[in-house]
Length: 231
Length: 326
View 1 (tube, one colour):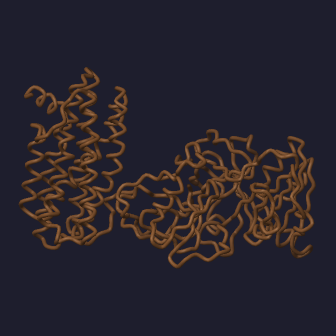
View 2: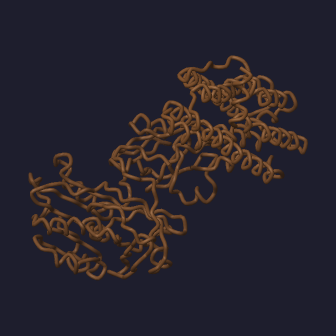
View 3: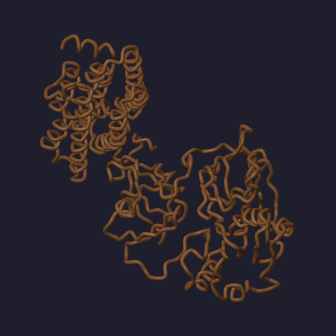
């Protein structure tokens, strides 16, 4: 597999490359640990409702990306090259496909497909939309970190879901894993192409640092348990 | 990496760490490398006609036919001719590699298998003897009838002749060009003979000459293995190029207005992909011959330079034909 961090774009991130990569690496690792921890806990008492609740939060992320990407194009798209508008729209379409596929998985586990922000996803969603309002590249920087965090969750998800016979979940995440390569590559390319000023770079780092501290939390068994208690 | 399953290869993506046991000259310009598993374990099995991808320490990947004994799982053998126009494959092996060096290789694949027949005619040119050598050994062991027509520039440039001479059951016709001229193909390819299988491996002019003489024969009567893709007889439209699917030998034309990926999908190749824009890298395919024209945004300069992988969603070919590991 190729590393999407090496995608060609412009030199807009050159001055902050090291910190960007450090953030991406740390969020991927912490999400991997959180996901593994979730499935370890799930193995102690494999209650489908728990897995459904865990997937509901992730399912919401997919549809929130759809809203966000379309808003990104509406608000800021004319600052971008036309091919990047097309690719952002393509990403949006794939996120909608993921929402549909994950929705089926949630329903098959007896859960309810979210139509509003689940409690566990509120900090994540609020931060993304706040970024959208602040700067034309900030929301992209935030979802670049969030999508990278998801990359860390794949392997433990495959292992954990397969262990309990949830082959449909594995299949869906195999497709999502392929598409995430595109999404993270596109995020990197857009940021490196359009970041021009120190202020742009500071906004990108602010968004990435903020998302690093949020993205992994909904993967933990503790958050899932708290969400279920609240429900 | 995508390796669509036209002829599935077991563990095709898994790489093997090998150690060079021996490196000896077996003819002018030809060295034979004996390769063993670096950890000393058994090597994967193979059958006559199989080849491996050798991934050299300089990043170059080249294909070499296995020419040892398939029953010996402790070692493989390959023969490497120093190609005059070497781009870092054979020249590296000849100048840099020694016994004890480590190499990485793919599992064996076989696009040139030995099929059952009543009798066999083999035509080998130069280093094209390598896939044929284990075929001869197997047929001799079986007591099958075979004839080998083997040509080379000079007698000293023709590898493994001593070994072949010890094989029973067949007849050998050695034809060094400086003594006998070109191989007398007309004498042995006058007509298709039912029950006789013809195998040919060697440089492009030899294969073309054999193909011309067998053009009217039934499909499959001639089995051949090329070192490089053949040239098309009819010219392609500007901007178009041809892709050869190495595992089946099928060829498809990529017109100027279509992507290589979409043409390959139409041809039945299942290739993982997502962006179709040269960003995600998921449609990566190995290039076995030809020079890709890289239009993607993800391969680094070293990967582009090596030319042994391509992203078919956006990339094209700088040569008339591109041979892909599909």
